[in-house]
Image (cartoon, rainbow, N blue to C red):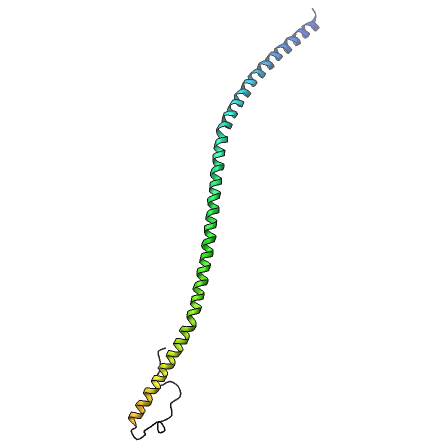
Length: 146
């Protein structure tokens, strides 16, 4: 046996031991992958129902948000309608109130003028009748707080 044969024997022995080590490593890795596959299966079995429930919950929340949106649109439209109604009533009441105020002011002026003429007639007994009464003064007889 020469040195070449010893080297070949050593190399053969190394390759056989390396093959056994790699085979053992592959067996251990197969066990690890089996455990990982089992864990992934369990996690999937637990997570899928949770995600389904979350999806159902989110669908319910989205439906409620749509309902709230409809309610808000209805409330805004109702508010706009009420605002238009108040504006219409306000406009409908303004004109008659202005006219009533004008008529009231005119009546007050007429009464003040009438009283002033009667007072002037009572103070001047020599003039009797409408022909002798002094002409009405232009402008207001007294200042009105209005």
